[in-house]
Image 1 (cartoon, helix red, strand yellow):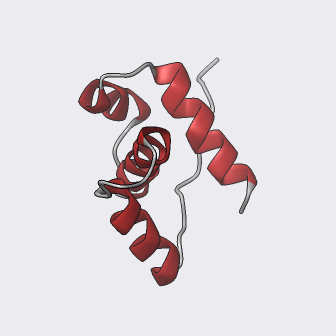
Image 2 (cartoon, rainbow, N blue to C red):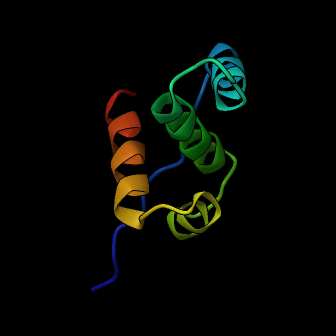
Length: 73
């Protein structure tokens, strides 16, 4: 049985701007910056595997943050 695909992450212009600012922040916590990078890349169309490789983290961690963001929509 094929795995179900996650829907795209739809963000408002304001949310996109905030994520963009946070992912490049030098003063925010490392955890918040990391999450913003994950969500930004997913919003841009990258796969969970691609994001995990690029950010040197696990697919499980990337999927967790994406799933949490999708639940908030």
